Image (cartoon, rainbow, N blue to C red):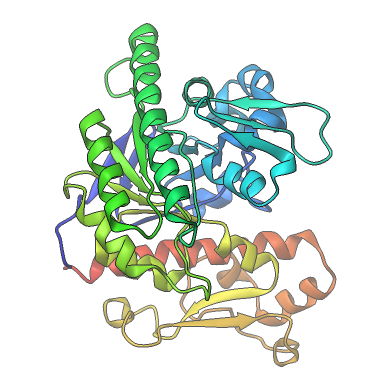
Length: 369
């Protein structure tokens, strides 16, 4: 390890032990899995998305159902992303859907007759109203290859929005008067693309404003899909190690290990669950009885359940895996229900890939013993 990072984070609904992988429950659900499935896979927390939740099911519905925890049946921590990345995906790649200004984000999703406004203040208000354990400031997300001018504007906006978010958060916390141990946390997001000077300018400004933790902002991969290790490493070095850092959008198994070694503790990504639904299942090359020696060289292998070799395979996805799928069902059965396009396949595959990710986090912790 290049630096001694924080080992855990206590939140109103429980403790996160680093490294921790959070599946994306964008609309208040992890596709094909319920809260009990997540608990049995030893998931510690999930990420939900303000940008999408304000549209479906909508804020009044969420509040009528008692907030995100009650609505989803999930009583462990929830981190709510602000919507900055989704605005980037929607607007920067297709301006007809909306615009960004110093005030905030204005957007009209494709097929919707309603226009939405998302400001730094509204993003914080919504996240607190939803009952989030960690609130993330609205930020102006960019691609690493965007121009210097775009990166500079992004950092200017991200800093200005962070100040407004902090002010709104503090005011609402004062008004709500949370009980001891129930106060949510506020994270700022560091932008700057691939320009080290802009990353530094953003990080220093956010540190001055003051946050409970920080996120790595912006797309974390280059044009060829490789992890931007140098930029991730530099960004982490700008923040004192006692502050937790969230590697937003990073969740490929190899990248989780790499970023944890750089000092990041929290990871989220839709890839493991999406891969599961599409027939790509994760497995360790090394057996489960030797986990401490299992993360060197090529330690990850993919099981493509659609392959004909699995038709009559009477063995689990991974020998020794303790998930529901591996303890009760064979590859041959999973191949069969995948071919049938039955929703049971989606559930069982998702459970396995989620358990793989929590087992990966367990193995990484063992490396330090």
